[in-house]
Amino acid sequence: MFYFSTSPAIPLGQTRKITIVTKDCGQKDLPCKVTLVNPKGQNSDLPTTASTDGYECDFTPDQPGEWKVKVEYASKEVPKSPFTVSVEISETTPKQLAKPAEQARKLLLLDVL
Image 1: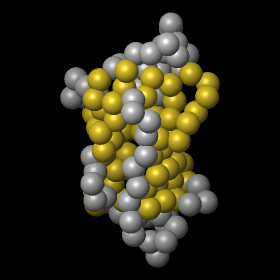
Image 2: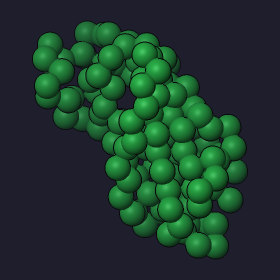
Image 3: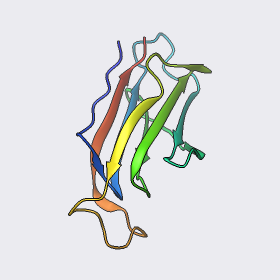
């Protein structure tokens, strides 16, 4: 079962947590990779850390537009990946993006079965 949850749009510069739940997959510690594709089409990998449920990583968008979040587990792309995330400039957007917003909110919860 797979879940994707986000607000209508993430404010530019605000950090969101991505959680990949692998605890019910038999082996929860197989390799996990999260790749971002920014609105300009450039790829970057997010470092993941092990958690009690599987893996986590933080996403802090540095430009507005449509982002893609590609998730691979055990060297296979999970169903419904890549996920689309909309990023917009808002009143909460920091004036200087050198410092991401301090409050992290949950972005993505995947239950990989």
